[in-house]
Length: 324
Image (cartoon, rainbow, N blue to C red; front, side, top):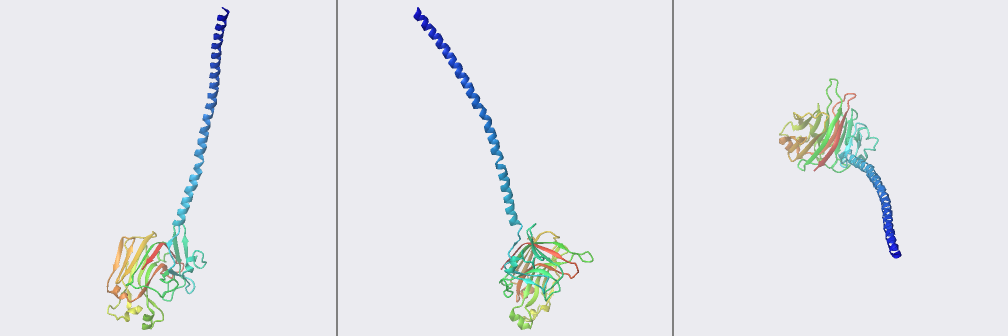
């Protein structure tokens, strides 16, 4: 009997121990769960920090890209290695390559030839002042030099030449009647060889310009030379007074102060001029054929056609290229 009692009491105690042990495990488990759940808030804070950190880096990268693109955009696309410039000062003054390449820091050039960083142009400014021997007008104008620093090497129509420019005339004064002054923005100028000069007894190599391109009243006007006597001898046609002006041609499109492109293509007995790559005029006749006797060089810039006090003009070139 006593033994049975002891066994029964032991069973009851075991059940109680199991129950107590289960309760303790349950409480301990709940305690651990609460500790595990609390840190779940922490990852949310970390994620927010990660999201905020890259934001300024993206903004900085965008700004740097814009600045790099701006540097390229704001520089004119013009190689001056084969150009000299004539200025409306001095007798007149000229700057040849390689000195012309430093135009941005040349104190003499800065008032007349400088970059406009707001639109990527090379500005040519002029007003009445000094002029060359064969003109009364002033200019800030480039003269092609096939051999840098020398005027002696030039080209013929048989050899061919092409010049293309992108430009505008944003500022030009008016006369007493309120009409715009006129400026020349491109030329093909003729030149005598030394032998031709000596043959006709001239003291310089000057020959007429076969092509003049004007900005006139907001439009582009073209002028060429024609022989006064198509039966003139080979020696007679070398004289400047053997050539006269044609009637000229004005392109119908209104250019105003807008940017435009103009292209000149010279070849054997032929010359073509093209405005904005859409309208062209071709000269292919006896006059072009006879002109083949001369050497030539391109000119580009601002050649103001007035002596009015207070007159001035700005011509902007964004691109200028020459090929032969």
